[in-house]
Image (tube, rainbow, N blue to C red; front, side):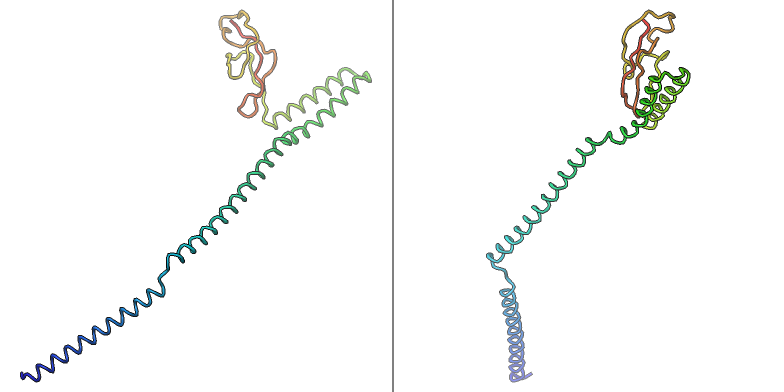
Length: 192
Protein backbone atom coordinates (compact mmCIF):
# COMPACT_ATOMS: atom_id res chain seq x y z
CA UNK A 1 0.00 0.00 0.00
CA UNK A 2 1.24 3.36 -0.81
CA UNK A 3 1.61 6.25 1.56
CA UNK A 4 -1.06 8.11 -0.25
CA UNK A 5 -3.59 5.33 0.26
CA UNK A 6 -2.57 5.04 3.88
CA UNK A 7 -2.96 8.77 4.36
CA UNK A 8 -6.40 8.68 2.73
CA UNK A 9 -7.41 5.82 4.95
CA UNK A 10 -6.14 7.66 8.02
CA UNK A 11 -7.97 10.81 6.92
CA UNK A 12 -11.12 8.83 6.33
CA UNK A 13 -10.82 7.11 9.73
CA UNK A 14 -10.25 10.45 11.42
CA UNK A 15 -13.22 11.93 9.62
CA UNK A 16 -15.37 8.97 10.67
CA UNK A 17 -14.20 9.33 14.27
CA UNK A 18 -14.90 13.05 14.26
CA UNK A 19 -18.33 12.41 12.81
CA UNK A 20 -19.07 9.83 15.55
CA UNK A 21 -17.79 12.24 18.21
CA UNK A 22 -19.91 15.04 16.77
CA UNK A 23 -22.98 12.83 16.78
CA UNK A 24 -22.32 11.73 20.39
CA UNK A 25 -21.71 15.33 21.44
CA UNK A 26 -24.92 16.45 19.73
CA UNK A 27 -26.80 13.60 21.45
CA UNK A 28 -25.36 14.56 24.84
CA UNK A 29 -26.22 18.21 24.29
CA UNK A 30 -29.76 17.32 23.30
CA UNK A 31 -30.02 15.05 26.35
CA UNK A 32 -28.65 17.78 28.64
CA UNK A 33 -31.10 20.28 27.15
CA UNK A 34 -33.95 17.81 27.67
CA UNK A 35 -32.83 17.16 31.28
CA UNK A 36 -32.64 20.89 31.93
CA UNK A 37 -36.16 21.33 30.59
CA UNK A 38 -37.60 18.43 32.63
CA UNK A 39 -35.50 18.99 35.74
CA UNK A 40 -37.53 20.23 38.71
CA UNK A 41 -35.99 22.91 40.79
CA UNK A 42 -36.06 22.54 44.59
CA UNK A 43 -38.53 25.44 44.83
CA UNK A 44 -40.87 23.71 42.41
CA UNK A 45 -40.56 20.47 44.39
CA UNK A 46 -41.35 22.31 47.67
CA UNK A 47 -44.40 23.98 46.10
CA UNK A 48 -45.59 20.62 44.75
CA UNK A 49 -45.16 18.94 48.15
CA UNK A 50 -46.95 21.80 49.96
CA UNK A 51 -49.88 21.46 47.55
CA UNK A 52 -49.97 17.73 48.15
CA UNK A 53 -49.82 18.29 51.94
CA UNK A 54 -52.75 20.72 51.80
CA UNK A 55 -54.75 18.17 49.80
CA UNK A 56 -53.96 15.43 52.34
CA UNK A 57 -54.92 17.73 55.24
CA UNK A 58 -58.30 18.42 53.62
CA UNK A 59 -58.88 14.70 53.07
CA UNK A 60 -57.96 14.03 56.71
CA UNK A 61 -60.34 16.72 57.97
CA UNK A 62 -63.18 15.33 55.84
CA UNK A 63 -62.48 11.84 57.16
CA UNK A 64 -62.43 13.06 60.77
CA UNK A 65 -65.70 14.95 60.26
CA UNK A 66 -67.31 11.82 58.78
CA UNK A 67 -66.09 9.74 61.70
CA UNK A 68 -67.36 12.29 64.24
CA UNK A 69 -70.78 12.33 62.55
CA UNK A 70 -70.84 8.52 62.57
CA UNK A 71 -69.90 8.44 66.27
CA UNK A 72 -72.62 10.96 67.20
CA UNK A 73 -75.23 9.12 65.13
CA UNK A 74 -74.28 5.79 66.73
CA UNK A 75 -74.48 7.24 70.24
CA UNK A 76 -77.90 8.73 69.49
CA UNK A 77 -79.18 5.42 68.11
CA UNK A 78 -77.82 3.59 71.15
CA UNK A 79 -79.48 6.07 73.52
CA UNK A 80 -82.78 5.66 71.65
CA UNK A 81 -82.52 1.87 71.91
CA UNK A 82 -81.88 2.08 75.65
CA UNK A 83 -84.66 4.61 76.14
CA UNK A 84 -87.24 2.73 74.08
CA UNK A 85 -85.88 -0.81 74.37
CA UNK A 86 -88.65 -2.01 76.65
CA UNK A 87 -91.37 -0.50 74.45
CA UNK A 88 -92.30 -3.72 72.64
CA UNK A 89 -92.17 -5.73 75.87
CA UNK A 90 -94.47 -3.28 77.62
CA UNK A 91 -96.86 -3.18 74.64
CA UNK A 92 -97.23 -6.96 74.88
CA UNK A 93 -98.00 -6.70 78.61
CA UNK A 94 -100.90 -4.27 78.16
CA UNK A 95 -103.46 -7.00 77.24
CA UNK A 96 -102.55 -8.82 80.46
CA UNK A 97 -103.16 -5.62 82.44
CA UNK A 98 -106.52 -5.22 80.65
CA UNK A 99 -107.49 -8.78 81.63
CA UNK A 100 -106.48 -8.15 85.25
CA UNK A 101 -108.63 -4.99 85.34
CA UNK A 102 -111.61 -6.99 84.02
CA UNK A 103 -110.99 -9.64 86.66
CA UNK A 104 -110.91 -7.00 89.42
CA UNK A 105 -114.18 -5.50 88.11
CA UNK A 106 -115.75 -8.98 88.13
CA UNK A 107 -114.62 -9.49 91.75
CA UNK A 108 -116.23 -6.18 92.71
CA UNK A 109 -119.52 -7.29 91.13
CA UNK A 110 -119.37 -10.42 93.25
CA UNK A 111 -119.58 -12.95 90.47
CA UNK A 112 -119.30 -16.73 90.68
CA UNK A 113 -116.12 -17.77 92.53
CA UNK A 114 -115.34 -20.65 90.15
CA UNK A 115 -115.59 -18.42 87.07
CA UNK A 116 -113.37 -15.81 88.76
CA UNK A 117 -110.82 -18.52 89.57
CA UNK A 118 -110.93 -19.74 85.96
CA UNK A 119 -110.52 -16.16 84.64
CA UNK A 120 -107.46 -15.48 86.85
CA UNK A 121 -106.02 -18.84 85.77
CA UNK A 122 -106.45 -17.82 82.10
CA UNK A 123 -104.70 -14.50 82.77
CA UNK A 124 -101.84 -16.34 84.52
CA UNK A 125 -101.44 -18.76 81.59
CA UNK A 126 -101.49 -15.84 79.12
CA UNK A 127 -98.78 -14.09 81.09
CA UNK A 128 -96.62 -17.24 81.33
CA UNK A 129 -96.91 -17.71 77.53
CA UNK A 130 -95.80 -14.12 77.05
CA UNK A 131 -92.77 -14.72 79.29
CA UNK A 132 -91.89 -17.86 77.32
CA UNK A 133 -92.10 -15.88 74.06
CA UNK A 134 -89.53 -13.49 75.58
CA UNK A 135 -87.28 -16.50 76.46
CA UNK A 136 -87.97 -16.16 80.19
CA UNK A 137 -88.20 -19.52 81.95
CA UNK A 138 -88.78 -20.52 85.57
CA UNK A 139 -85.92 -22.18 87.47
CA UNK A 140 -86.96 -25.62 88.69
CA UNK A 141 -85.53 -25.78 92.23
CA UNK A 142 -87.36 -28.02 94.70
CA UNK A 143 -85.59 -31.37 95.12
CA UNK A 144 -82.53 -30.26 93.14
CA UNK A 145 -78.97 -29.79 94.42
CA UNK A 146 -78.31 -26.33 95.86
CA UNK A 147 -76.49 -24.25 93.23
CA UNK A 148 -75.24 -20.77 94.16
CA UNK A 149 -75.36 -19.75 90.49
CA UNK A 150 -79.17 -19.94 90.40
CA UNK A 151 -80.26 -20.26 94.05
CA UNK A 152 -80.18 -17.93 97.03
CA UNK A 153 -80.45 -19.70 100.38
CA UNK A 154 -83.02 -18.01 102.62
CA UNK A 155 -82.56 -20.48 105.46
CA UNK A 156 -81.07 -23.85 106.35
CA UNK A 157 -83.45 -26.48 107.70
CA UNK A 158 -82.65 -29.92 109.09
CA UNK A 159 -83.15 -32.40 106.27
CA UNK A 160 -86.03 -34.85 106.88
CA UNK A 161 -84.01 -37.45 105.01
CA UNK A 162 -80.19 -37.82 104.84
CA UNK A 163 -80.48 -37.90 101.03
CA UNK A 164 -81.88 -34.32 101.14
CA UNK A 165 -78.71 -32.83 102.68
CA UNK A 166 -77.42 -30.03 100.43
CA UNK A 167 -80.60 -30.14 98.36
CA UNK A 168 -83.41 -27.62 98.04
CA UNK A 169 -86.27 -28.59 100.37
CA UNK A 170 -88.64 -25.75 99.48
CA UNK A 171 -88.77 -22.78 97.10
CA UNK A 172 -90.11 -19.63 98.76
CA UNK A 173 -89.79 -17.38 95.68
CA UNK A 174 -89.45 -18.82 92.18
CA UNK A 175 -86.38 -17.80 90.18
CA UNK A 176 -86.30 -16.96 86.48
CA UNK A 177 -83.77 -17.05 83.66
CA UNK A 178 -83.74 -15.11 80.41
CA UNK A 179 -81.92 -17.06 77.71
CA UNK A 180 -78.98 -18.49 79.73
CA UNK A 181 -78.70 -15.63 82.22
CA UNK A 182 -80.25 -15.50 85.68
CA UNK A 183 -82.94 -12.84 85.77
CA UNK A 184 -83.81 -13.48 89.42
CA UNK A 185 -82.27 -16.04 91.78
CA UNK A 186 -84.65 -18.55 93.34
CA UNK A 187 -85.00 -18.03 97.11
CA UNK A 188 -84.87 -21.51 98.65
CA UNK A 189 -84.72 -23.47 101.88
CA UNK A 190 -81.73 -25.81 101.92
CA UNK A 191 -81.50 -29.07 103.86
CA UNK A 192 -78.64 -29.38 106.34
